[in-house]
Image (cartoon, rainbow, N blue to C red):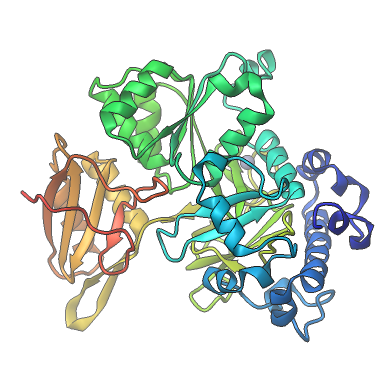
Length: 475
Ligand SMILES: [Zn+2]
């Protein structure tokens, strides 16, 4: 059993690790040296446990002195390899993949605990193989404490007056028909706090847009929580007069949020927005502070920004991918796990005073485009730059841009949107980066295609994306 003995005395956890809420509160103001020592202590405890209880890690860490080897000296793991050896990877022998899969396939059990103790979250596999992640009770308590304590409140006075959220109505718009972390957490919250059950609603982003708009209108939320692309889509519906909400806050996460995109959502809804970064592998990886910087919860999760050969990249440099080590969860250890996101770690400390490092997350769901350049060269275009060009120069927020050939792009918009300046802006940007002249075709769709998880991939290099291109209706 993982829940009792693995977090007991044998791992030499110090006293305040036993109460995650107190531990999270105290670590917020630790000096950087003390934070590193706390990370190391938790890491060694995790490694000892992994070697003792996971056959997978016993193999992969064989011959390595886990007490002394720095994290960067340990092997990198990937989802496909872990999923192939799922039963050996998990540290509780009662957890077996067929039973977990049957649980995760049953929509009536979203928010239940598997074997009465583990949350089960699936990742959609929109960029590769689907994964299934179990979270043990300690990890859930840590995530809850981080979610409650770390994001700076957008309306501190309101939270003082209403600490139990009794005056709020929270609409979550996302994927509601699978065991995805956000929907499962919403269901879990509604069970833990039944007085909130009617005031926190989940709505499927995959339903027809008129039905979604009607549900939102009827529910009349004060807080909207969703993906940035869905917030953009709803903001455009609001700007067109198809939706009339009185929002006090918008919360986003799960995809990259651009600066212009954020400004547009805030101005249309007339309220502030709080962004966060999380994953099925670790739910609250980073949260925004009072000055809007995204702080890594480095006391419980380690992120290593690395290049394509998993070598560290210096602060201030955008990584090719990122290695995640989850210090809170022991039922399914994640140690130097390639999460596939590009991040940038800031060298300087934030002006808010927090010692927690500041990160930026870029191009999470989006592809790098590779266009033809002169003399057979390839010119790479960053998804964040392309989104910024479309947002800032063409005022487009709800779009899908596909690379369909070496020098051809296809821009999909929803009906009624004008491509206006977009074609010229894209051509100017691509040629400015050194690409040969680019043809941009424009088409419209009744709605942009979202994956099972409800996320929208806005920048797609066809042939590399799992998401199928939509049925064509070019103009
Ligand atoms: Zn800060």
